Length: 296
Image (cartoon, rainbow, N blue to C red; front, top):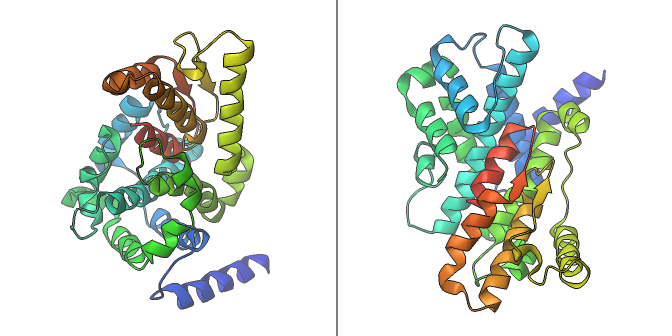
């Protein structure tokens, strides 16, 4: 039976990776997705004690869940676990970039996830009542231990191309890892959902080419001499995922400002552009949250 084959493959992969170093991004995505499926299966049938999380989703993301229906409850369970695990991975990459000498702990993720929703989500997870209700503590501990086995030098070296995109000499590999990671994670976590909603990873070379080509067309043929930095240009990505295209647009705007000698005004002008005329929509909560985090 196909289901038995899948279970056997999962068992074998768990046996050989449970304590082994991890260097390949796709392998890490599969391992975390397998753990996430177990965490989802361990969630309670009802969420009466964590109703506040529903309000957090509504306020921060404009999402509401009808937990009285099977479909609504399933979507919330999937969204919660995806956001938890992808948020954990995001926090780990930002912890790696910070190089602040601290040990990695999921309970400290709110120190690195600097958008209110994600920080509050992990703060909620730490609450003893929430841990007991959601039964997530053991699962997050296992995921954190998995991330602790990653050979970070080799892992992030896989994203070396993105250093070509650095706008101020910084290390952009953590950003590239966040952009890449969701598609293989969802493929392993819920392949039907990934196929249904068309979640596909776009290589950074293609993103860069397409965005830069549009920037040139704006300058040469549409009378916008500053390209994406022209305040008349509105950018809309109707399925932004983890914000690969919007991030490249932001880099174009920043480069124009620097080229014009507006370094002192860069932060203010970039914030103005991103908050008024660079717009992204995304139906899945985990990449939408990470898109906000990356743009922040």
